Length: 188
Image (cartoon, rainbow, N blue to C red; front, side, top):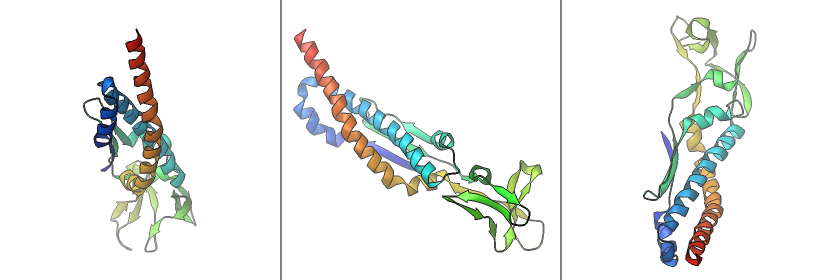
């Protein structure tokens, strides 16, 4: 399981001191900004993973990334992903009799195999791809690609930069809205 989270409770103490008259408005603005930020991290993160693994589909990536939303009481949000290595079918496999089975791993198409043993497809097991365990014998094992948590962990730095830039623009906008709302209430 890979996790990425944002916790802004310590950052908000100074803001709450400056804007005491807003009351729970600061927490409201922060929770909305956190939810906007984490949603953006999920979308942009899926696009970033897609750039590095062009055979994966953005919908499949986003489906595996679960969001933890912030509330006014819990000012932290995050995204996590769990999962096993993905079946080779997710990596656009192509088979040619002489060349063997190739798949798109990362940005390039590579020949699949291990120690001179070729990969083959077995129709009886849902068209999954297998390789023989030994040079001789009938024992086979399923071939899979990388797991989504591994790909997710490899991009954590990029996710952090996305989150920091999004938070820096979203929180002031949400706070400004709460300030305007409080000023309008005070005028009426």
